[in-house]
Length: 334
Image 1 (tube, rainbow, N blue to C red):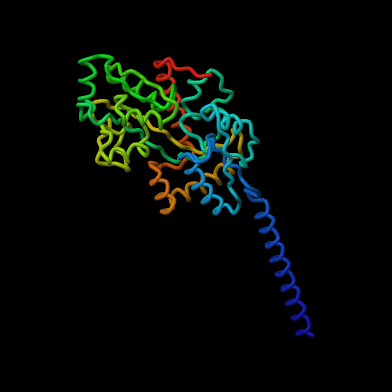
Image 2: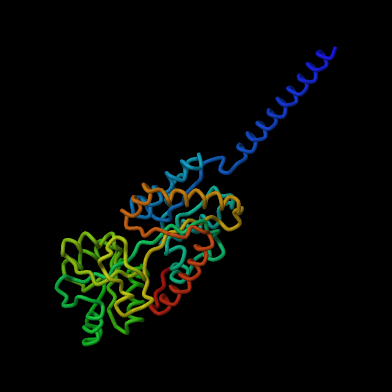
């Protein structure tokens, strides 16, 4: 009788254990099924396909998608200097399934540059992560008789208004870089706008213009072949791409800092736990040796601070800086 009762107790205990295990497994499966993301994420790039911003975004999308177990689909929505894509993201559902790979234009400069912008970088987006920046570099025609920023300033001041700089267009970072330089150095470099970086660089190579503040990735092949002369990188510290070049800041213009920055944002109101999940995934990808090499090869100086709060503060400071520069330039675009 005792053996029979013991067997019944053992069977009850075993059944209870199996039931508990089954419920636990079901709970885990249910939790996993409800975890974010449950479907593909749209990664808006507010510029055309094929450019450097698009290439960087696709590198990140592949890694993040693999980590999250869902596709991260790049969606190019170009136009108005990035405003069309940024506006679409600002109006999207704040559920974490629409995010943007933003740059200095839509996240800082355009708010002051364009007369009609229907979003505010401070209040329309929830920052996810700061990715890095692409430095500009000051290059001059190879026969200009200067070898440093101070020599350039001295030459210009000897004949005010006699030197010019090419940009990729009114309001572009290569234009505003020259405006900021004039303001800090007390020079009067004349602005010559072009329709894009290519035409501006072609005229610089031909000696038709004196200098340009262009991105370092575009400029370095011509620097290394001796077709243009570099005077300094336009960031506060030297560039990892060309560490042998001094910065403009260390040549007598402390605080001079011009680059195109890159950050990932979502519509404001996106749940914090989803922002955290996305931040974690992007941070993990950005610490991958393979991804870091790929982005560095594209000229990007990578972030060392992955907190969303860092990107929020950076956007705020860039908005203030570029507002002052745009006002000084008197530049406006419709």
